[in-house]
Amino acid sequence: MFTQFVLPYGFDSLEPYIDMPTMLTHYMKHHAAYTANLNAAVEKTPQLSGKDIVTLLRNLTDITSDEVRLAVRNNGGGFYNHNLYFSTLSPSGGGSPSGALADRIIHDFGSSDALKEALSKAALARFGSGWAWLSVDGDGKLLVGSSANQDNPLMDSPASTPILGIDVWEHAYYLKYKNLRADYVKAFWQVVDWEAVAKLYETARM
Image (tube, rainbow, N blue to C red; front, side, top):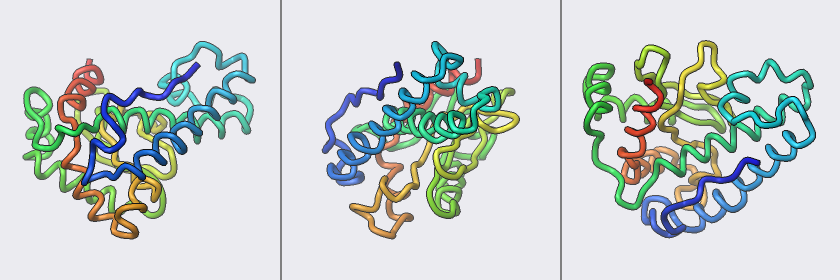
Protein backbone atom coordinates (compact mmCIF):
# COMPACT_ATOMS: atom_id res chain seq x y z
CA MET A 1 0.00 0.00 0.00
CA PHE A 2 1.30 3.43 -0.94
CA THR A 3 1.43 6.05 1.82
CA GLN A 4 1.95 9.79 1.84
CA PHE A 5 5.25 11.26 2.92
CA VAL A 6 4.84 12.19 6.59
CA LEU A 7 5.57 15.88 7.02
CA PRO A 8 8.37 16.55 9.54
CA TYR A 9 7.12 20.13 9.91
CA GLY A 10 3.79 21.77 10.71
CA PHE A 11 1.32 23.01 8.13
CA ASP A 12 2.13 26.58 9.16
CA SER A 13 5.89 26.08 9.29
CA LEU A 14 6.63 27.28 5.75
CA GLU A 15 4.95 30.65 6.23
CA PRO A 16 5.17 33.33 5.01
CA TYR A 17 6.39 31.69 1.79
CA ILE A 18 3.79 28.90 1.63
CA ASP A 19 0.73 29.56 3.75
CA MET A 20 -1.06 27.14 6.05
CA PRO A 21 -4.39 27.05 4.11
CA THR A 22 -2.49 26.07 0.96
CA MET A 23 -0.51 23.40 2.80
CA LEU A 24 -3.63 21.92 4.37
CA THR A 25 -5.52 21.76 1.08
CA HIS A 26 -2.50 20.59 -0.90
CA TYR A 27 -1.49 17.80 1.47
CA MET A 28 -4.77 16.73 3.08
CA LYS A 29 -6.95 16.96 -0.03
CA HIS A 30 -4.97 16.78 -3.27
CA HIS A 31 -2.07 14.57 -2.20
CA ALA A 32 -4.37 12.33 -0.16
CA ALA A 33 -6.69 11.88 -3.16
CA TYR A 34 -3.84 10.92 -5.50
CA THR A 35 -2.64 8.37 -2.94
CA ALA A 36 -6.08 6.84 -2.42
CA ASN A 37 -6.80 6.65 -6.14
CA LEU A 38 -3.42 5.05 -6.86
CA ASN A 39 -4.03 2.40 -4.21
CA ALA A 40 -7.47 1.71 -5.64
CA ALA A 41 -6.05 1.22 -9.14
CA VAL A 42 -3.31 -1.11 -7.92
CA GLU A 43 -5.59 -3.15 -5.66
CA LYS A 44 -7.83 -4.15 -8.57
CA THR A 45 -4.90 -4.99 -10.87
CA PRO A 46 -2.96 -8.12 -9.79
CA GLN A 47 -0.11 -7.51 -12.25
CA LEU A 48 0.80 -4.32 -10.35
CA SER A 49 0.88 -5.91 -6.89
CA GLY A 50 4.14 -5.43 -5.02
CA LYS A 51 5.69 -3.01 -7.49
CA ASP A 52 7.18 0.22 -6.18
CA ILE A 53 6.11 3.57 -7.59
CA VAL A 54 9.31 4.18 -9.57
CA THR A 55 8.95 0.82 -11.34
CA LEU A 56 5.31 1.57 -12.14
CA LEU A 57 6.03 5.00 -13.59
CA ARG A 58 9.07 3.89 -15.59
CA ASN A 59 7.07 1.05 -17.15
CA LEU A 60 3.65 2.52 -17.83
CA THR A 61 3.53 0.92 -21.28
CA ASP A 62 3.58 -2.52 -19.63
CA ILE A 63 0.14 -1.88 -18.16
CA THR A 64 -2.25 -3.46 -20.65
CA SER A 65 -5.47 -1.78 -19.55
CA ASP A 66 -5.85 1.76 -20.92
CA GLU A 67 -8.02 2.71 -17.96
CA VAL A 68 -5.58 1.44 -15.35
CA ARG A 69 -2.56 2.88 -17.18
CA LEU A 70 -4.18 6.32 -17.17
CA ALA A 71 -5.11 5.98 -13.49
CA VAL A 72 -1.55 5.03 -12.55
CA ARG A 73 -0.06 7.76 -14.73
CA ASN A 74 -2.23 10.50 -13.25
CA ASN A 75 -2.55 9.32 -9.65
CA GLY A 76 0.79 7.52 -9.40
CA GLY A 77 2.44 10.60 -10.85
CA GLY A 78 0.59 12.80 -8.39
CA PHE A 79 1.56 10.54 -5.50
CA TYR A 80 5.25 10.41 -6.44
CA ASN A 81 5.51 14.09 -7.37
CA HIS A 82 3.96 15.29 -4.14
CA ASN A 83 6.02 12.96 -1.96
CA LEU A 84 9.10 14.46 -3.60
CA TYR A 85 7.81 18.03 -3.35
CA PHE A 86 6.95 17.93 0.35
CA SER A 87 10.13 16.03 1.24
CA THR A 88 12.34 18.74 -0.28
CA LEU A 89 10.79 21.65 1.62
CA SER A 90 11.84 22.85 5.06
CA PRO A 91 11.21 25.77 7.44
CA SER A 92 15.00 26.11 7.62
CA GLY A 93 15.44 25.86 3.86
CA GLY A 94 16.72 28.37 1.36
CA GLY A 95 20.28 29.39 0.67
CA SER A 96 22.33 27.41 -1.82
CA PRO A 97 23.41 23.80 -2.24
CA SER A 98 26.80 22.55 -1.09
CA GLY A 99 29.08 19.54 -1.51
CA ALA A 100 28.93 17.21 -4.48
CA LEU A 101 25.57 18.59 -5.61
CA ALA A 102 26.94 22.13 -5.69
CA ASP A 103 29.97 20.93 -7.67
CA ARG A 104 27.74 19.26 -10.23
CA ILE A 105 25.52 22.32 -10.49
CA ILE A 106 28.54 24.48 -11.21
CA HIS A 107 29.74 21.94 -13.79
CA ASP A 108 26.37 21.75 -15.58
CA PHE A 109 24.98 25.26 -15.11
CA GLY A 110 27.84 27.53 -14.08
CA SER A 111 26.40 28.51 -10.67
CA SER A 112 23.53 27.80 -8.30
CA ASP A 113 21.95 31.12 -9.29
CA ALA A 114 22.02 30.04 -12.94
CA LEU A 115 20.31 26.77 -11.99
CA LYS A 116 17.62 28.61 -10.02
CA GLU A 117 17.05 30.93 -12.96
CA ALA A 118 16.74 28.02 -15.41
CA LEU A 119 14.35 26.08 -13.18
CA SER A 120 12.29 29.20 -12.46
CA LYS A 121 11.98 29.87 -16.19
CA ALA A 122 10.82 26.29 -16.75
CA ALA A 123 8.18 26.73 -14.05
CA LEU A 124 6.92 30.02 -15.47
CA ALA A 125 6.90 28.76 -19.04
CA ARG A 126 4.81 25.67 -18.25
CA PHE A 127 1.41 26.41 -19.78
CA GLY A 128 -1.45 25.36 -17.54
CA SER A 129 -0.93 22.81 -14.79
CA GLY A 130 2.29 20.88 -14.36
CA TRP A 131 5.77 20.81 -12.87
CA ALA A 132 9.30 22.09 -13.38
CA TRP A 133 12.03 19.55 -12.63
CA LEU A 134 15.65 19.18 -11.71
CA SER A 135 16.58 15.60 -12.53
CA VAL A 136 19.60 13.36 -12.95
CA ASP A 137 20.20 11.32 -16.11
CA GLY A 138 21.95 7.96 -16.43
CA ASP A 139 25.36 9.63 -16.66
CA GLY A 140 24.87 11.73 -13.54
CA LYS A 141 24.20 14.94 -15.48
CA LEU A 142 21.69 17.42 -14.08
CA LEU A 143 18.77 18.35 -16.32
CA VAL A 144 16.12 21.06 -16.11
CA GLY A 145 12.76 20.47 -17.73
CA SER A 146 9.03 20.56 -17.21
CA SER A 147 6.02 18.31 -17.66
CA ALA A 148 2.29 18.70 -17.92
CA ASN A 149 -0.26 17.51 -15.38
CA GLN A 150 1.25 14.89 -13.03
CA ASP A 151 3.84 13.55 -15.47
CA ASN A 152 7.51 13.54 -14.47
CA PRO A 153 10.94 12.62 -15.91
CA LEU A 154 10.60 8.96 -14.85
CA MET A 155 8.07 8.64 -17.67
CA ASP A 156 10.40 10.08 -20.32
CA SER A 157 12.44 8.08 -22.80
CA PRO A 158 15.20 8.03 -21.81
CA ALA A 159 14.09 8.45 -18.23
CA SER A 160 15.82 10.62 -15.65
CA THR A 161 15.35 10.74 -11.89
CA PRO A 162 13.76 13.85 -10.34
CA ILE A 163 15.47 15.33 -7.30
CA LEU A 164 13.57 18.63 -7.05
CA GLY A 165 10.20 19.71 -8.41
CA ILE A 166 8.29 22.97 -8.45
CA ASP A 167 4.56 22.30 -8.43
CA VAL A 168 2.87 24.88 -10.66
CA TRP A 169 -0.65 23.51 -10.43
CA GLU A 170 -2.83 26.37 -9.20
CA HIS A 171 -3.66 24.47 -6.03
CA ALA A 172 -0.01 24.86 -4.99
CA TYR A 173 -0.12 28.64 -4.83
CA TYR A 174 -3.45 30.24 -5.77
CA LEU A 175 -4.85 30.75 -2.25
CA LYS A 176 -1.93 33.02 -1.40
CA TYR A 177 -0.50 34.27 -4.68
CA LYS A 178 -3.61 34.25 -6.89
CA ASN A 179 -2.45 34.49 -10.53
CA LEU A 180 1.06 35.65 -9.61
CA ARG A 181 2.90 32.42 -10.27
CA ALA A 182 6.21 34.27 -10.48
CA ASP A 183 5.87 35.43 -6.87
CA TYR A 184 5.24 31.87 -5.74
CA VAL A 185 8.25 30.55 -7.66
CA LYS A 186 10.45 33.26 -6.14
CA ALA A 187 9.20 32.38 -2.65
CA PHE A 188 9.71 28.65 -3.28
CA TRP A 189 13.48 29.07 -3.18
CA GLN A 190 13.25 30.28 0.41
CA VAL A 191 12.02 26.89 1.64
CA VAL A 192 14.01 24.43 -0.51
CA ASP A 193 15.78 21.86 1.64
CA TRP A 194 19.07 21.54 -0.23
CA GLU A 195 20.26 18.85 2.18
CA ALA A 196 17.34 16.65 1.15
CA VAL A 197 17.94 17.42 -2.53
CA ALA A 198 21.63 16.51 -2.13
CA LYS A 199 20.71 13.12 -0.66
CA LEU A 200 18.38 12.44 -3.58
CA TYR A 201 21.18 13.43 -5.95
CA GLU A 202 23.61 11.02 -4.32
CA THR A 203 21.08 8.17 -4.61
CA ALA A 204 20.15 9.01 -8.20
CA ARG A 205 23.70 9.10 -9.53
CA MET A 206 24.67 5.70 -8.12
